[in-house]
Length: 218
Image (cartoon, rainbow, N blue to C red; front, side, top):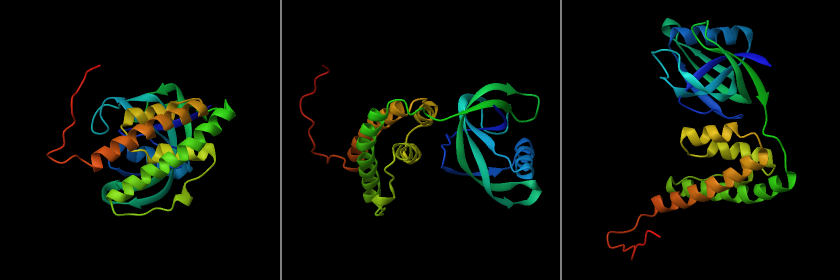
């Protein structure tokens, strides 16, 4: 069990993912300065209800990720730009609302390597899907990437696949909260299959004379 300050945001942070934040509210200036002074992380949590800034403290989802501050740019009036890197998943056990910012007792966890054979099977499916997804994206942006940088180990490929996926926050929150590695890998395979198909459709729209043919609702 650990005690963390929480930063509710409209984004989902994963282990290994970098995030850049502009700190301007007094409550988060206080929070970040304490983290810097004590060399401690804070917890990034997706907002469930409420606003990201300039209002009552938002209500977060119960699963988040710790963020370790790696760079700080001090600005006038005590504002700052910070860069932080995601480290560890956690579940909120109890929230303390007695400070200007949220704090919580949290329990760290990793998706359990519960079914090794399934995990390795999904890993062999997921890696080429991620590569194809990135190739499709890079072709639209006239960019290139080195496929050898995509890892082979199941947990690593699941981590990078979660970070790279261009999906909505609710879907990413589901991935972050998944307690089982086999279930996480299976979900990622399903999402990447669909997202790659949708991406190809978006990047190759039919011309004006395209005829989809007869349509049945069955």
